[in-house]
Amino acid sequence: MDACHAVATFSWRSSCLIRVVRLSDTHSLHVSQLGACGDTNIPNNTIACTEKRPAFGSFGSIKESEDWKALEVGETVHSLGYPVWMMNKGWEVALDEDLEDPLSSQNDSRSNPKFTSKHIALAKEFMNSKVADAALGNDGYLPTALNRGVESRRRVAVDLFMGLHLLLEEQKLDIMTPEYASPGRVDLRVLLCQIARWLKWADFWSVYELGVQEDIDQRHDSELNLIPSIPQPPLRPDIFLWIQSRLTREGEVSYPTPADIFYTGLNLPKHKNRFDPRWDEIVPRTLILKRFFRLLKRDATAVDMVETMYECGMTTHFLETLPEAILVPFKDAISLCQPRPPSYWSRDLLDFVKRGTSA
Image (tube, rainbow, N blue to C red):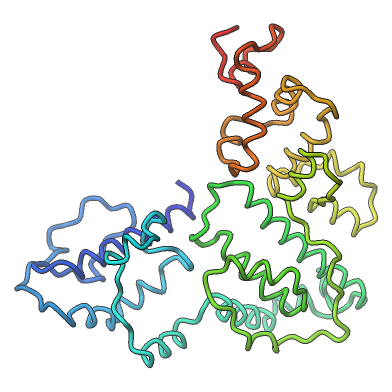
């Protein structure tokens, strides 16, 4: 279990325990007595038997405690307190929450700011530090340092933004990427949405806003005003549209990789890009699909397609974690080869199409 999944699991477990406290009539559980994540043997003294709790109002006292607020701060940002399958009308009763006092909510928002406000404050704090001055000041070493030309810094800013956008597109290719955990797609989308609003790139922020879990505070838009503004890129890379165009061969939709942006910015030959393995860990699925479409013959048969899939590094796990719309043509090619696989296929290729017993 990776760190992201562990934190999300802990948040969900904590919420379950809290709801048990709320619904229980014979026991009370103090938040400070909760064990660490993963503890299965909870000592008996962590659950104290008390007299029957009042039907109303008892949960409010827990929510006002310092331990409760500390638990909320430690919870995963944007994570759900319940499974995704409970997000429907049938479970509204189970997920019913007490109406909060507006004044209390306002105070909570000040003491526990939203993701965007919190990270803008952290960014400002970093910019005033000695570390930031060494990296971005007059003697800085980063490409956006003050000792670089204005046009160079503006160009690098666009490259950085596009690199983050391509990382977000990469995450769309894996259905196992957590949507409601932090760090995850939501955090990156919120970050890019606010940056795009500062840059006034409507084609970008209007799309990012569709998937964020918090209201975008328009008051932050006035904190950065570039004069002159940086022009919006003519195209917003969309990996789904690119894959569709390559599979259907209806028009050519360009799709860059972070390596393309990197080598273009440094004016290096693009052929070196093919032999640079560092990008495989950043956008592995994008690069596998890039290699696949580059090697696939124009009039490829199902056998050619499966052989190219295997040659490019596609595995069973890779296919099973692709979005359904992208998976279908690959699964279709495999199903056409399963009844009569070529006799010259290796054991690994036969296993790839689930016909290992044919060898």
